Length: 193
Image 1 (tube, rainbow, N blue to C red):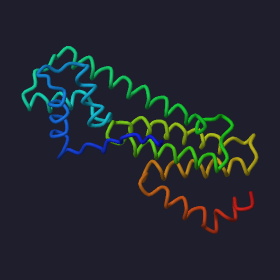
Image 2 (image 1 turned 60 degrees about the vertical axis):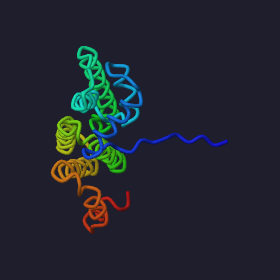
Image 3 (image 1 turned 45 degrees about the vertical axis):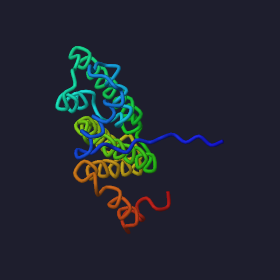
Image 4 (image 1 turned 180 degrees about the vertical axis):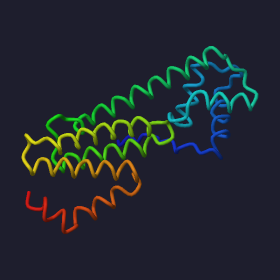
């Protein structure tokens, strides 16, 4: 017997209130605290903050147990920040002192973009931007390091350019990179390696 997990479609501004109120009514309670908020959150989607849920419930006339609501929201936000930091921490390769190969850098930047897209409403862009700027500065420093081979310096300069483009136009980066890798200059410089 195959078990399928029920997926909750993302809540939109148009339907969030209705979904929250419906989930609240299904609980058959007038008072809402942390336990009820978490049950409603599971029903409407775990990307919706407890504070947003509480706001919708207050508008619908629910009696909120405010200290629990505040604590629940603070805990949820702490978990979000912790998870984001873990995901960004896994991108440590972009900051490696000895640098990355082009294929490794491409994979790391793709992960940066995936993080940006998945968390674009949570304020993660500022953290990702800072991370990418630091990684770019590191690549530029390695590109100027005369103790490295000329090829390694060229690779680091290329990675720094990739990061510059991602920072300026993250939505277009994937297409730009595909064009860049097909360009005559790129193939001449890196094609046989």
